[in-house]
Length: 49
Image 1 (spheres, rainbow, N blue to C red):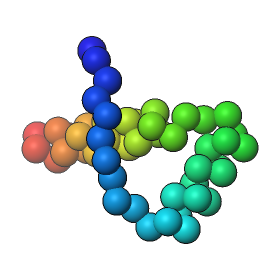
Image 2: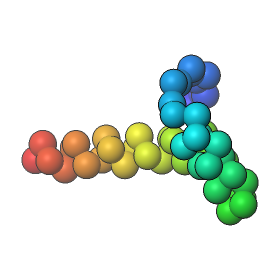
Image 3: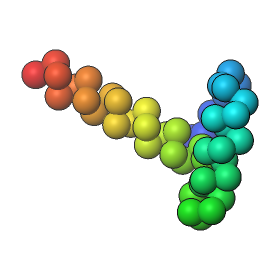
């Protein structure tokens, strides 16, 4: 599966803080967003049952 570049508008202070958090914990910000979206879709699937 390919990767898609997207533009997001987020609160600047939250972005800066979370980016630092990811760097401190050796995480990739975009992969965290991927996981968040995947989790949300999974919840939606479970609620649809």
